Length: 170
Image (tube, rainbow, N blue to C red; front, side):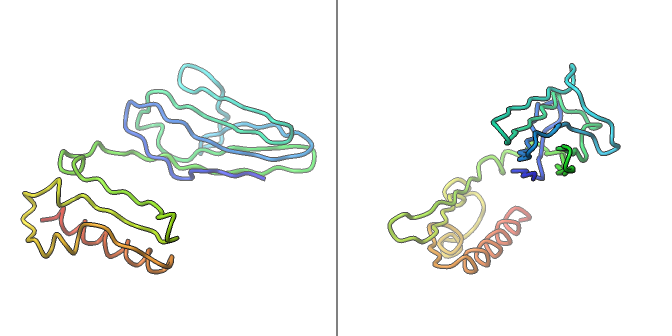
């Protein structure tokens, strides 16, 4: 069995990035990484492969040093033993550095432990008074909202993200 905590991983050019893969196998498996073309990855000055074994569980890490455009794409982790094999895939994509306006915008989602409700806060309007939104728009688009169901939360997040996208286009 393979479990990949992050199947999509973003990285800036020139930064280091770590890909992770968890396997469970008995008898013990042989574990390794490949690039999308199928060539096996070994530790060298570009890649660092680490394996942490605990009985039948293995935590694999692939560290890609100083990411270049050629590094973007798919990576696979494999686990093979006498009973068979399994593989997982991780896609590495380029992340562009954000603008000053985007860096000033922050949001947080957290769970209200007392009421069992999800609460979403948005401090966009306090950090971006120059946005031109009137106070009614600011009240509707910021502050705290409570959600009693997952469906409400997902729908509200879609509406909220759409409104953020419209604000950044202004």
